[in-house]
Image (cartoon, rainbow, N blue to C red; front, side, top):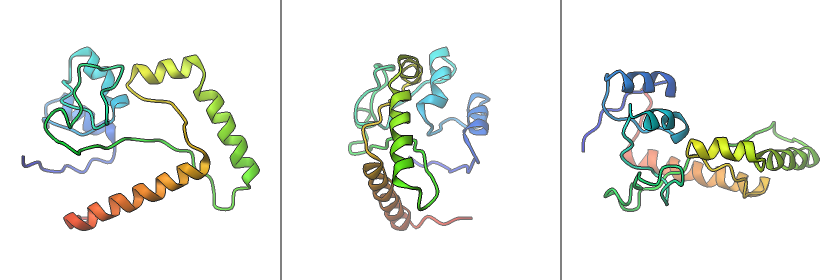
Length: 148
């Protein structure tokens, strides 16, 4: 398949153009797409997650849709300045875990196909950031991606 990359600065304009018919396919997050999928204005072709999303069990994974090995998971993180005291990091992490475990937050996130589980320590999250940075840097280099 040949696709033309259209460099939007964010989801808002891309989603508006997708809904308006200016382009026919987009790669976006489920939280941004979920309302439009539920309303029938968009058809989700696949998720890039390893397993189907509990909130959208009818949407196949990319692997199920014919792209074996294709997996990309969106994650969100909270970052602070270099040298942030460990005690503050620990407290912020504990408060975030507590907030993410509330029924209200879990329900809202699940409703848009997001997993609000914080299953990592701050050190594990830092390792994930380093790992993903290296992974995507290799992809960028391998395909010769350049900034226009």
